[in-house]
Image 1 (spheres, rainbow, N blue to C red):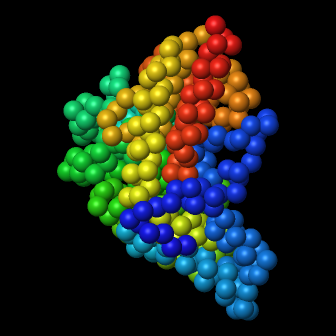
Image 2 (image 1 turned 30 degrees about the vertical axis):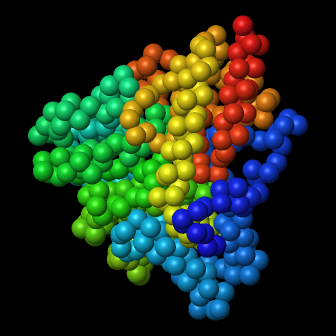
Image 3 (image 1 turned 180 degrees about the horizontal axis):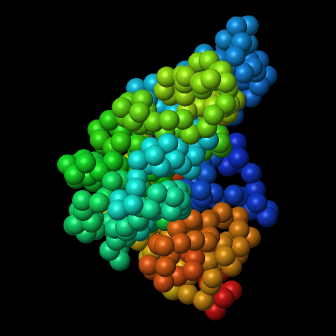
Amino acid sequence: MSIDRAAVDWAAVRAEFPLLQREVHGKPLVYLDSANTGQKPAAVIDATDDFYRRHNANVSRAVHALGSEATEAYEAARGKLARHLNVRADELVLTSGTTFAINLAAYSWALPRLEPGDAILVSRMEHHANIVPWQLVAERTGATIKVADITPDGVLDLDALEAAMTGEVRLLAVTHVSNVLGTVNPVREICRMARKRGIVTVVDGSQALPHMAVDVAAIGCDFYALTGHKMCGPTGTGALWARREHLQARPPFLGGGEMSRQVSFGGTPFNAPPHRFEAGTPNIAGHIGLGAAVDYLDALGMDNIAAREQELLAHLDEEMGKVEGLRVIGKAPGKAAVVSFLLDGAHGHDLATLLDLEGVAVRSGHHCAHPLMAYYGVPATCRASLAFYNTHEEIDAFIAALRKVRKLLA
């Protein structure tokens, strides 16, 4: 795909996403749930289909033509993703997504190193995937969990965060972009503060990569986790980037085929990273599809995507501000195109169900962020999340549906 970056035809871009053409309950679909999972362009669907139709074989296990083709395509996808992140391909472990990636860092790096008296620092806005693995490690090692708080607007309090970086803190886990608030954390500054104190940093990049260009090398973290399905790729794909020294020093998380050089009952030497962390048959077609998604995003231009989404977000914010009884949770400046909200008199689940009847898909619930919901004193919210393939007309349809629902509840 080739797109003129000076003048993107967003209608033509939208037409490349087959699912967006369908109807729901007899109404045109308005998909505002991309923070949950992104829709897939035809190029990604075609890439996975082509693998199964023409190249299907296991990777790194055969010298026949299909095996060679599968391995070449799989490793090419790793290379595409590495270039997209500005990192080395041999520092990128392909995983099933962010959850697996963070658990890999937790069990392979943290579990063998932490001990009683150590602490893990996390922010209050973290997804459960960047909380629960650290709790499990803390239970097994005797380490403790410390929490860095936020302001009512949903901004991470950097002064409080820095003050919490005391001597016992060995690891800091922080999200790049909040999946509930849309807050974009200054991870480069945060990692610099941590590095001065010898604190290892794990950044959850799930919600950042769909919205903006991410230069992992410039961020300066120790680990960066990502998921493919939020950035137009297939489900069950993702990666963990780690500094080379961490990869070389860490034991494998899973044992099995293709992660070892030779197995004997006397002992097993492991392959070099990243393959020592990729035991078993991977999601080959999925990661080839993720490579196609990276090609698609790169051709479109992440700066173009960011600008388009900020334009849509400005429209959404303006129109939501006109809806009586609507409360937005999280108003950080420079936020990503994610808006959590409540409507007077409606539980989040009920509101999402009524919006669905109008063809509008939003997310409802705690968004795997119970501590954040507790901070705001609410059991759940609705969340409207935009992507570059959305339109101003869809935003207007969403607002009309909100007003209709409000009248029903009056």
